[in-house]
Length: 345
Image 1 (spheres, rainbow, N blue to C red):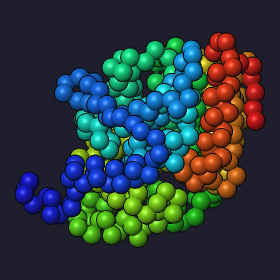
Image 2: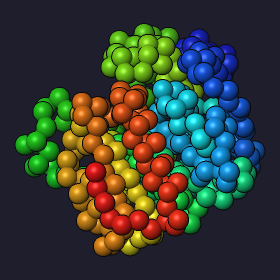
Image 3: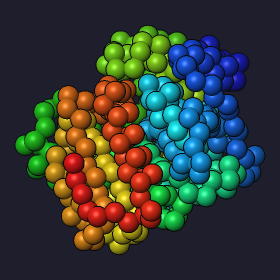
Protein backbone atom coordinates (compact mmCIF):
# COMPACT_ATOMS: atom_id res chain seq x y z
CA UNK A 1 0.00 0.00 0.00
CA UNK A 2 2.73 2.49 0.97
CA UNK A 3 4.62 1.75 -2.27
CA UNK A 4 1.49 2.30 -4.34
CA UNK A 5 0.22 5.56 -2.83
CA UNK A 6 3.00 7.89 -4.06
CA UNK A 7 2.27 6.96 -7.68
CA UNK A 8 -1.47 7.36 -7.09
CA UNK A 9 -1.07 10.74 -5.44
CA UNK A 10 2.08 12.36 -6.83
CA UNK A 11 3.13 14.24 -3.70
CA UNK A 12 5.70 14.30 -0.92
CA UNK A 13 6.80 16.57 1.90
CA UNK A 14 9.74 17.64 -0.28
CA UNK A 15 7.37 18.67 -3.10
CA UNK A 16 5.24 20.66 -0.65
CA UNK A 17 8.34 22.43 0.62
CA UNK A 18 9.48 23.17 -2.93
CA UNK A 19 6.06 24.54 -3.92
CA UNK A 20 6.15 26.82 -0.89
CA UNK A 21 9.70 28.02 -1.60
CA UNK A 22 8.81 28.85 -5.20
CA UNK A 23 6.19 31.33 -4.00
CA UNK A 24 8.00 32.73 -0.96
CA UNK A 25 11.03 33.44 -3.18
CA UNK A 26 9.04 36.47 -4.39
CA UNK A 27 9.45 38.12 -0.97
CA UNK A 28 11.96 40.92 -0.75
CA UNK A 29 12.42 40.56 3.01
CA UNK A 30 14.31 37.90 4.89
CA UNK A 31 12.49 35.45 7.12
CA UNK A 32 13.35 32.51 9.31
CA UNK A 33 11.53 29.25 9.99
CA UNK A 34 10.65 27.99 13.44
CA UNK A 35 9.32 24.56 14.30
CA UNK A 36 7.71 25.01 17.70
CA UNK A 37 6.99 21.87 19.78
CA UNK A 38 3.39 21.62 20.99
CA UNK A 39 3.60 18.25 22.72
CA UNK A 40 3.58 14.55 21.83
CA UNK A 41 6.20 15.06 19.14
CA UNK A 42 4.08 17.53 17.16
CA UNK A 43 5.25 20.94 15.96
CA UNK A 44 3.69 24.08 14.57
CA UNK A 45 5.79 25.51 11.79
CA UNK A 46 5.91 29.31 11.59
CA UNK A 47 7.67 32.00 9.62
CA UNK A 48 9.16 34.96 11.50
CA UNK A 49 10.02 38.35 10.01
CA UNK A 50 11.82 41.05 11.95
CA UNK A 51 10.80 44.72 11.64
CA UNK A 52 12.40 46.67 8.82
CA UNK A 53 12.18 49.86 10.90
CA UNK A 54 12.69 48.83 14.56
CA UNK A 55 11.18 51.10 17.18
CA UNK A 56 11.64 51.58 20.91
CA UNK A 57 9.69 50.44 22.71
CA UNK A 58 8.93 47.58 20.35
CA UNK A 59 5.51 47.65 18.73
CA UNK A 60 3.01 44.88 19.37
CA UNK A 61 3.84 41.81 17.22
CA UNK A 62 1.43 40.64 14.53
CA UNK A 63 0.38 36.97 14.19
CA UNK A 64 -1.26 35.69 10.98
CA UNK A 65 -3.40 32.54 10.82
CA UNK A 66 -4.43 31.18 7.42
CA UNK A 67 -7.75 29.78 6.27
CA UNK A 68 -8.96 26.30 5.39
CA UNK A 69 -6.88 24.18 3.03
CA UNK A 70 -3.91 26.50 2.98
CA UNK A 71 -0.96 27.76 5.02
CA UNK A 72 1.56 30.55 5.38
CA UNK A 73 1.87 31.00 1.62
CA UNK A 74 -1.62 32.50 1.28
CA UNK A 75 -0.21 35.76 2.76
CA UNK A 76 2.71 36.10 0.33
CA UNK A 77 1.31 39.38 -1.05
CA UNK A 78 1.12 40.87 2.45
CA UNK A 79 4.17 39.71 4.38
CA UNK A 80 6.62 42.32 3.05
CA UNK A 81 4.20 45.12 3.89
CA UNK A 82 2.99 44.13 7.34
CA UNK A 83 6.29 43.66 9.17
CA UNK A 84 7.62 47.11 8.36
CA UNK A 85 7.66 48.30 11.99
CA UNK A 86 6.96 45.16 14.05
CA UNK A 87 7.85 41.50 14.31
CA UNK A 88 5.51 39.27 12.30
CA UNK A 89 4.66 35.60 12.78
CA UNK A 90 2.74 33.55 10.22
CA UNK A 91 1.99 29.96 11.11
CA UNK A 92 0.68 26.76 9.59
CA UNK A 93 -2.21 25.48 11.67
CA UNK A 94 -1.77 21.94 13.02
CA UNK A 95 -3.12 19.48 10.49
CA UNK A 96 -2.31 21.77 7.55
CA UNK A 97 0.64 22.56 5.27
CA UNK A 98 4.00 21.93 6.99
CA UNK A 99 2.86 21.65 10.60
CA UNK A 100 2.35 18.20 12.11
CA UNK A 101 -0.79 16.43 10.93
CA UNK A 102 -2.10 15.77 14.42
CA UNK A 103 -5.30 13.75 14.98
CA UNK A 104 -8.41 15.65 16.02
CA UNK A 105 -11.51 14.59 17.98
CA UNK A 106 -14.79 13.98 16.18
CA UNK A 107 -17.01 16.48 18.01
CA UNK A 108 -17.14 20.14 16.97
CA UNK A 109 -16.52 21.70 20.38
CA UNK A 110 -13.62 19.34 21.10
CA UNK A 111 -12.02 20.04 17.71
CA UNK A 112 -12.22 23.79 18.31
CA UNK A 113 -10.69 23.33 21.77
CA UNK A 114 -7.86 21.22 20.31
CA UNK A 115 -6.94 23.93 17.79
CA UNK A 116 -7.01 26.60 20.51
CA UNK A 117 -4.90 24.48 22.86
CA UNK A 118 -2.31 23.95 20.12
CA UNK A 119 -2.19 27.69 19.40
CA UNK A 120 -1.64 28.45 23.08
CA UNK A 121 1.21 25.93 23.28
CA UNK A 122 2.71 27.60 20.21
CA UNK A 123 2.43 31.02 21.90
CA UNK A 124 4.17 29.70 24.99
CA UNK A 125 6.86 28.14 22.81
CA UNK A 126 7.74 31.38 21.01
CA UNK A 127 7.44 33.44 24.20
CA UNK A 128 4.82 35.97 23.09
CA UNK A 129 3.05 37.89 25.82
CA UNK A 130 0.54 40.01 23.86
CA UNK A 131 0.00 40.39 20.15
CA UNK A 132 -2.33 41.50 17.38
CA UNK A 133 -4.05 38.40 15.98
CA UNK A 134 -5.23 38.29 12.36
CA UNK A 135 -7.09 35.26 11.04
CA UNK A 136 -8.58 34.52 7.63
CA UNK A 137 -11.76 32.46 7.11
CA UNK A 138 -11.38 29.33 9.29
CA UNK A 139 -8.38 31.08 10.83
CA UNK A 140 -10.69 33.95 11.77
CA UNK A 141 -13.09 31.53 13.46
CA UNK A 142 -10.23 29.96 15.42
CA UNK A 143 -8.75 33.38 16.23
CA UNK A 144 -12.09 34.35 17.78
CA UNK A 145 -12.17 31.12 19.75
CA UNK A 146 -8.59 31.66 20.95
CA UNK A 147 -9.45 35.22 21.99
CA UNK A 148 -12.41 33.95 24.02
CA UNK A 149 -10.21 31.44 25.83
CA UNK A 150 -7.11 33.63 26.26
CA UNK A 151 -8.49 37.20 26.09
CA UNK A 152 -5.56 39.00 27.69
CA UNK A 153 -3.03 37.63 25.21
CA UNK A 154 -4.69 39.40 22.26
CA UNK A 155 -4.39 43.17 22.08
CA UNK A 156 -6.49 43.55 18.93
CA UNK A 157 -8.32 40.93 16.88
CA UNK A 158 -8.51 41.35 13.09
CA UNK A 159 -10.95 39.07 11.26
CA UNK A 160 -10.16 38.70 7.56
CA UNK A 161 -13.34 37.53 5.80
CA UNK A 162 -14.13 35.23 8.74
CA UNK A 163 -16.08 32.00 8.33
CA UNK A 164 -18.47 30.63 10.92
CA UNK A 165 -20.10 33.75 12.34
CA UNK A 166 -23.74 33.49 11.20
CA UNK A 167 -26.41 30.84 11.70
CA UNK A 168 -27.10 28.24 9.01
CA UNK A 169 -30.21 29.15 7.06
CA UNK A 170 -33.33 27.02 6.98
CA UNK A 171 -33.95 24.62 4.12
CA UNK A 172 -36.84 26.70 2.78
CA UNK A 173 -34.73 29.86 2.65
CA UNK A 174 -31.90 27.90 1.05
CA UNK A 175 -34.26 26.81 -1.72
CA UNK A 176 -35.45 30.37 -2.33
CA UNK A 177 -32.13 32.21 -2.03
CA UNK A 178 -29.64 30.03 -3.86
CA UNK A 179 -29.37 28.36 -7.25
CA UNK A 180 -29.72 24.63 -7.81
CA UNK A 181 -26.00 24.44 -8.59
CA UNK A 182 -25.02 26.09 -5.29
CA UNK A 183 -27.43 23.88 -3.33
CA UNK A 184 -26.04 20.79 -5.03
CA UNK A 185 -22.49 21.81 -4.12
CA UNK A 186 -23.53 22.29 -0.49
CA UNK A 187 -25.25 18.92 -0.44
CA UNK A 188 -22.17 17.15 -1.76
CA UNK A 189 -19.92 19.12 0.60
CA UNK A 190 -21.96 17.98 3.59
CA UNK A 191 -21.26 14.33 2.74
CA UNK A 192 -17.63 14.41 1.65
CA UNK A 193 -14.56 16.21 2.91
CA UNK A 194 -13.73 19.17 0.63
CA UNK A 195 -10.57 17.71 -0.93
CA UNK A 196 -11.70 14.09 -1.18
CA UNK A 197 -12.32 14.63 -4.88
CA UNK A 198 -8.71 15.68 -5.49
CA UNK A 199 -7.26 12.84 -3.46
CA UNK A 200 -9.56 10.38 -5.21
CA UNK A 201 -8.45 11.36 -8.70
CA UNK A 202 -4.88 10.23 -8.09
CA UNK A 203 -2.33 11.33 -10.69
CA UNK A 204 -4.97 13.41 -12.47
CA UNK A 205 -5.45 15.51 -9.32
CA UNK A 206 -2.99 18.33 -10.11
CA UNK A 207 -4.43 18.80 -13.61
CA UNK A 208 -8.04 18.73 -12.37
CA UNK A 209 -7.30 21.21 -9.61
CA UNK A 210 -5.68 23.65 -12.05
CA UNK A 211 -8.64 23.40 -14.42
CA UNK A 212 -11.35 23.62 -11.75
CA UNK A 213 -9.83 26.37 -9.58
CA UNK A 214 -8.51 28.80 -12.16
CA UNK A 215 -10.00 31.51 -9.97
CA UNK A 216 -7.34 30.83 -7.33
CA UNK A 217 -4.64 30.94 -9.97
CA UNK A 218 -5.84 34.37 -11.03
CA UNK A 219 -6.19 35.76 -7.50
CA UNK A 220 -2.88 34.38 -6.20
CA UNK A 221 -0.66 33.08 -9.04
CA UNK A 222 -0.77 29.96 -11.18
CA UNK A 223 1.75 27.91 -9.21
CA UNK A 224 -0.19 28.61 -6.00
CA UNK A 225 -2.34 25.64 -7.03
CA UNK A 226 0.72 23.37 -6.81
CA UNK A 227 1.04 24.44 -3.18
CA UNK A 228 -2.69 23.85 -2.56
CA UNK A 229 -2.43 20.40 -4.11
CA UNK A 230 0.54 19.20 -2.09
CA UNK A 231 -0.89 20.75 1.11
CA UNK A 232 -4.18 18.87 0.81
CA UNK A 233 -3.52 15.45 -0.66
CA UNK A 234 -1.30 14.45 2.23
CA UNK A 235 -2.73 13.17 5.53
CA UNK A 236 -5.73 15.56 5.85
CA UNK A 237 -6.16 15.72 9.63
CA UNK A 238 -6.85 19.46 9.69
CA UNK A 239 -9.49 18.97 7.02
CA UNK A 240 -11.04 16.18 9.09
CA UNK A 241 -11.15 18.51 12.08
CA UNK A 242 -12.80 21.24 10.00
CA UNK A 243 -15.31 18.73 8.63
CA UNK A 244 -16.44 18.00 12.20
CA UNK A 245 -17.00 21.72 12.84
CA UNK A 246 -18.85 22.61 9.61
CA UNK A 247 -22.50 22.44 8.61
CA UNK A 248 -23.03 22.18 4.85
CA UNK A 249 -19.49 23.52 4.42
CA UNK A 250 -20.58 27.18 4.44
CA UNK A 251 -21.62 27.40 8.09
CA UNK A 252 -20.29 26.36 11.49
CA UNK A 253 -22.11 24.00 13.83
CA UNK A 254 -21.26 26.42 16.65
CA UNK A 255 -21.66 29.88 15.04
CA UNK A 256 -19.87 32.72 16.75
CA UNK A 257 -22.60 35.38 16.79
CA UNK A 258 -24.35 33.55 19.64
CA UNK A 259 -21.16 33.45 21.68
CA UNK A 260 -19.38 36.77 21.34
CA UNK A 261 -21.74 38.68 23.62
CA UNK A 262 -20.98 36.44 26.61
CA UNK A 263 -17.66 34.75 25.80
CA UNK A 264 -15.60 37.54 24.20
CA UNK A 265 -13.95 40.07 26.51
CA UNK A 266 -15.85 43.36 25.98
CA UNK A 267 -12.57 45.28 26.28
CA UNK A 268 -11.00 43.41 23.35
CA UNK A 269 -11.09 45.59 20.19
CA UNK A 270 -12.15 43.76 17.03
CA UNK A 271 -11.81 44.82 13.39
CA UNK A 272 -13.61 42.94 10.61
CA UNK A 273 -12.64 43.04 6.93
CA UNK A 274 -14.88 41.51 4.28
CA UNK A 275 -14.70 41.43 0.51
CA UNK A 276 -17.84 42.88 -1.08
CA UNK A 277 -17.94 39.89 -3.48
CA UNK A 278 -16.99 37.25 -0.92
CA UNK A 279 -19.16 34.12 -0.83
CA UNK A 280 -18.89 34.16 2.97
CA UNK A 281 -20.09 37.76 3.15
CA UNK A 282 -22.96 36.94 0.77
CA UNK A 283 -24.39 34.40 3.25
CA UNK A 284 -25.63 37.36 5.32
CA UNK A 285 -24.57 40.86 4.31
CA UNK A 286 -25.70 42.22 7.66
CA UNK A 287 -23.00 40.14 9.41
CA UNK A 288 -20.88 43.11 10.48
CA UNK A 289 -23.87 44.95 11.92
CA UNK A 290 -24.96 41.76 13.68
CA UNK A 291 -21.46 41.34 15.11
CA UNK A 292 -21.40 44.92 16.40
CA UNK A 293 -24.87 44.54 17.88
CA UNK A 294 -23.95 41.32 19.66
CA UNK A 295 -21.17 43.02 21.62
CA UNK A 296 -21.83 45.09 24.76
CA UNK A 297 -22.26 48.83 24.38
CA UNK A 298 -18.87 50.53 24.29
CA UNK A 299 -16.99 47.55 22.84
CA UNK A 300 -14.91 48.54 19.82
CA UNK A 301 -15.84 47.03 16.46
CA UNK A 302 -14.22 48.46 13.32
CA UNK A 303 -15.79 47.32 10.05
CA UNK A 304 -14.24 47.46 6.58
CA UNK A 305 -15.80 46.38 3.28
CA UNK A 306 -13.35 46.14 0.37
CA UNK A 307 -15.02 46.90 -2.96
CA UNK A 308 -14.91 44.21 -5.66
CA UNK A 309 -12.87 41.85 -3.43
CA UNK A 310 -13.66 38.14 -3.14
CA UNK A 311 -13.13 35.82 -0.17
CA UNK A 312 -9.34 36.06 -0.31
CA UNK A 313 -9.33 39.81 0.24
CA UNK A 314 -5.63 39.83 1.16
CA UNK A 315 -4.69 38.34 -2.22
CA UNK A 316 -7.38 39.77 -4.49
CA UNK A 317 -6.94 43.37 -3.30
CA UNK A 318 -3.59 43.30 -1.50
CA UNK A 319 -2.94 47.06 -1.65
CA UNK A 320 -6.27 47.91 -0.03
CA UNK A 321 -5.93 45.07 2.47
CA UNK A 322 -2.39 45.99 3.51
CA UNK A 323 -3.34 49.65 3.87
CA UNK A 324 -6.38 48.72 5.99
CA UNK A 325 -4.36 46.47 8.29
CA UNK A 326 -1.66 49.09 8.70
CA UNK A 327 -4.37 51.62 9.57
CA UNK A 328 -5.66 49.24 12.25
CA UNK A 329 -2.13 48.72 13.58
CA UNK A 330 -1.72 52.48 13.87
CA UNK A 331 -4.85 52.53 16.05
CA UNK A 332 -3.30 49.81 18.21
CA UNK A 333 0.00 51.72 18.49
CA UNK A 334 -1.72 54.96 19.46
CA UNK A 335 -3.89 53.41 22.19
CA UNK A 336 -2.70 53.40 25.77
CA UNK A 337 -4.92 50.46 26.68
CA UNK A 338 -7.16 47.82 25.08
CA UNK A 339 -10.42 49.76 25.27
CA UNK A 340 -11.46 52.00 22.38
CA UNK A 341 -14.75 53.71 21.82
CA UNK A 342 -17.24 51.91 19.56
CA UNK A 343 -16.60 52.82 15.95
CA UNK A 344 -17.19 51.70 12.41
CA UNK A 345 -15.60 52.82 9.15
